[in-house]
Image (cartoon, rainbow, N blue to C red; front, side, top):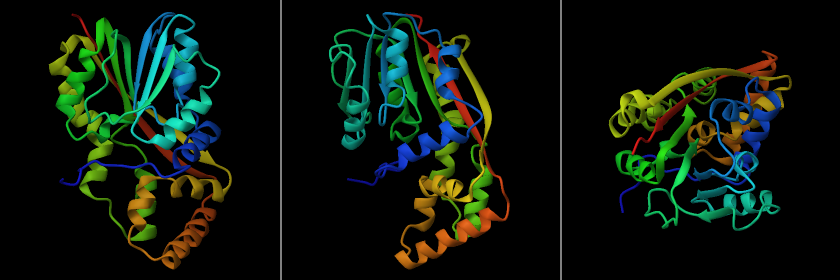
Length: 269
C-alpha cells in the first residue's frame, strides 16, 4: 500500500500538552469563540470528526444536551480512551465515541446531523473530495459543516525559528497542511454547497510564554519538531533541546503568532 501523503499519528501526550499550553498562554479561546459564532441548539445532533482526546465533546454536550446527541470519532485508540474518561459522566446513549479513520467507510448512522465539526483534523485526509461529500451527506437540510484548522500564516515565526535551530526546511507536505483549508477545501466547499452558503475567515492570535521551558515544551510537542529531528540520534536531539532553551531565553517573553482558518457551509436540501 502506498504511503499516505498527509498521514499523521499523534504521539502520546503531545496533543494534551499543546491543548494545555493554548489554554494557559493564548489570547484566544476556541471554546469561547465556537458557541458565540455557531448557534448550536438544545436537541441538536453533532458529529465531531477527528475528535482527538475529546477536547470539544464536553462543550458540544453542554450546548446540545440533555436531548441532543454527540458522536466523536478518531482513528487513535489511545485518544479515544482519553476521551471516554473525559466524558464518563455523560449519558452513554447520548454521547458516543468510536475508533474510526475518516478515510475509511464511516459507520451507518440512524439519523443525520445538524452539525458536522472537523476541528484540526480532516486536513490530513488523503481524498478531500470524497470525504467532504460524504460528510455533507450526513447533514440534515439546514445543517452546517464546519472545518477549523491552521491558517496560511500559522506559526510562521515558530517555523523560522525551527529552521534556524535545526537546519531543516519543512517539506511540501508541511506547507500543504497549513494552507490546505484555504487553498483546497475552500474552493471545494464552493462547489459542494452553494457559494452564498459558504463562509470563510482567518483569526489571528498570540501565545505568550513567560518561561522559556514552556515555549520549548510546546515546540517539542509539535509535528514541526518531530519532522525536523527525524533520523537524528538521541544525543543530537538532546543537544538541540539545550540549544532551544538557550535561544528562547535570550528573547523573553517568547511569543508564537497563531492563525486559524474557519470554513463553514450550510446544506440547503
